[in-house]
Length: 242
Length: 293
Image (tube, rainbow over all chains, first blue to last red; front, side, top):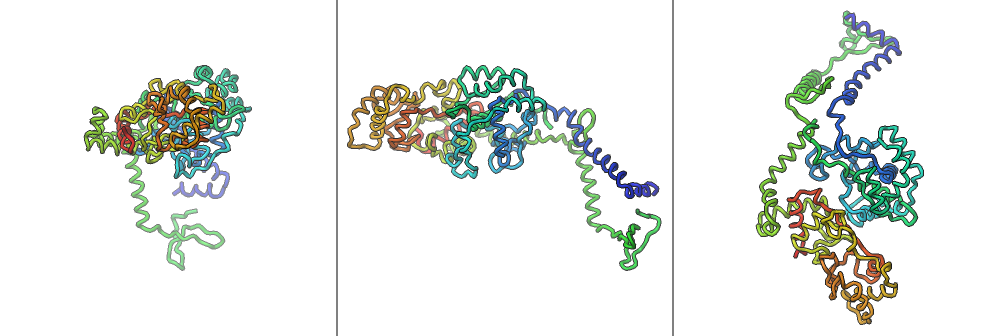
C-alpha cells in the first residue's frame, strides 16, 4: 500500500511524471531497438552488394523525385506466392546502401526489387513513355517527359559525398571520376569495362539523348540494376534463417 | 490518489468511488465487465505461450529460438518445398524428357502448357502480350512468323539465351547481325524509298514499277532476307512475304524507317533466371499458341 501512495508524487509534479514517462519509454525502446545492433541474424551481410554507379544514383534520385515508391515496393516478402513470382525474398543487406531505402508498403504496381534485366531497355523506355503500349491494362501514369529531359548531374559528387557520410563506401577515386563515370555507362564497351573495375557487374546502356544523358537514361540504368548484384546461389540461406 | 483503506460508496449509484475528488466531483470505480477481464487475462497467458513457442526474447548472445524453432525464412522455404513436392511428379519428368517427348505425351504436355502459361504471364507477357500476340517491336508468338525459328528446340534456345542479350550463346551476341541502318551504309534516301516500295509490294501487291527497288534488294538485302525475301532464322532475318502482322509494321512509311535507321530488338536471356523445367514448359506453351513449327 505504501508504494501506491508514492504515486501521488508523479501525479502532482509534472516534471517528475515527464522523467518517469521517458524512463519507461526508453526501456521499451532499448529492448526493441538495442538487440538489432548486435544480434547476428539482423546484421548479416550478403556478397555482391555494391554502391550505385553515378548514373544509377542519378536515376535513383529521379525514382525518389517522381514518387515511384508510392506504387512500387522493393521488398519481396518471405511468402510463397511472392517468392514464386518475384524471386528470392529480399534481405536487409541488399538495401544497405539505400539512403533512404525504397522498400515501400504499397503495391499498386508490382514489386520491382528484382526487375533488373527482366525486360529490355527498349521495353523500359517504351513502358515509361506509355505503359499502355505494352501492358494494356496498366494504370501507371505516363513518364514520357523524362525521355528528352536533360539529366542534371551537376551535384552528383555532392550526392556521393553525403552518402559516404551515411556509410556508403564511395572512395575518393569514385567521387573524383563521378561525372566521367556517369557518361561512361552510356558509352561503349571499353568505357563500361573500365567502369566495371569500380562498380562490378555494371551494365552499359545506350543513351537516347542527342545532347548528353537524359533523365530517362538514368532511370532505366537504375531500374536495370535492381536486384542484379547479389547471386543467391552463393547465399547461405540456412545460416541466416530467422 | 487511490485510497484503498476507505471504500467510499457513491450514494446515487451505490458504486464505490476511486477516492479521487475534484471540486466535489468524485470518480466512480465501476468494475470492468467480467468477460472482458477474463479475455484480458487469457491474452496475457497467450502471450506467455508465444514467448515459449516462438522466437521472442533478445539476450546478449542472441535471441531465444522458441521450442518450435520457427523462423519466417524457414517457413517460406518449407512452403516452397511443399510446392516443389506437389509438382515433382511432372517436373522431374519434364526435366528428363526431350521437348518432343513432352509434346507427344498428352498428360505431360497438358501440365507443361499450364506450367508454362503461369510462367509466361509473369515473365513474358509484359512484352509479348498476355496471349502472345506481341506489340510493336515485340514479336507475335501466336502467328507463323518467327525471327529465330519456331520449332520447339529453337524456341527453347531463344528463351534460354535470348537475342542480343549479352549471353555469348544467344542469337547475334555482338549485335552485328541486327538490321543495319542503311542510311549510314551507303543507300541514298531515294534508294531507300525504292527498296521500301518493293518490300511493301511483297505483301500489298501494287501495279507500280518496283523493279529499281528489287534490284537494290537483291544487292543489299538478299544476303540476310534471301533472294525470295523468305527470311533466314539463322540470321534472325524475318520473312518479308508473310501477310501476318509485322514486327514494326508493313506500311511503306514504317519500312522506310526500318531500312534507314535499322532495328535491333533485344530478347533477354532467361537461362539464369528460370530453371530448365520452366523453360521447357514455356517452349511447349509458346509452341502451342498457334504458330509452332
